[in-house]
Length: 343
Image (cartoon, rainbow, N blue to C red; front, side, top):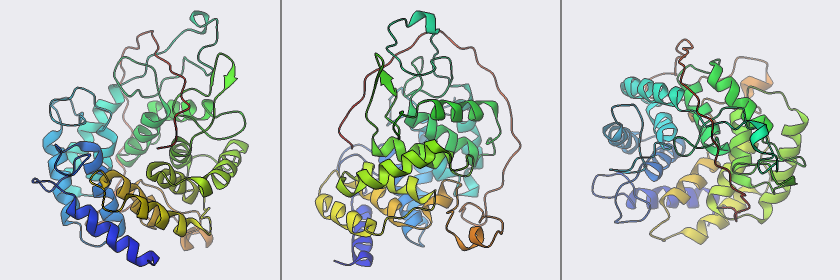
């Protein structure tokens, strides 16, 4: 199967995995859920010219948005960690600016809890526990992935210079593992460095792209991914890892064959929707613009011209002025040692 053939097949399969509402669940026939719906919508925007399926997804996500601006995993769920994913979809459609702004207001009010270093004498958490990013669940500590996704979503809505985004970027920089890359949360536990993982490393690189120069931390992360990804076929790990590399102008020559092999492993499976989405996002040149980024290898960048505007249906995405909101910060922390198998 050629590169073009697997992409077309993956796109067709992704559309077939939709449920009755023409949105996606974690499995075919399962209840619709925000994460697979948002990822699939972004993947379809990145991989083809028909925006109608993604617009349907944007509408469903808007209906899922609660009065406080957050979006849960599915109907009746409390956690709002899917809000940034939905915001990336809304950012592509001018009709959903109001939903995008409500999501930003909620994100700006959500803070990861802090912990005074004096309360952690055993150094369970090996990072600066006073920096505030975003948690998976309200009233818990900040984690790498929700922080990176919040930064990307808020920046799409014009908050790139907001104090919360600036501190969120500091969280990411502080969580870098000493020998390169990022884990899901901590960089060390009880003084021992954790292992980096491809997906959070890719997300961290994506969030830092266009903000940082190629620091030693960035170079170490790129080196880690270029060495790790040849042996990775888990779709989320491979997908986000490649997207992170692409944001820094690195596209491994063999990446197309890796994506094809990963596709053959999930092809035809009922739980393939979010996996196919990650692979299609990693395979498309349009993906970076969906996250408000541009390729460092793009013609405009090489010629010293202004970078291309982020993708948006009906025109480019305008930036709204930075706004500041405050929220009280409680003092508590939840940490975990994370050395999971790449997803």
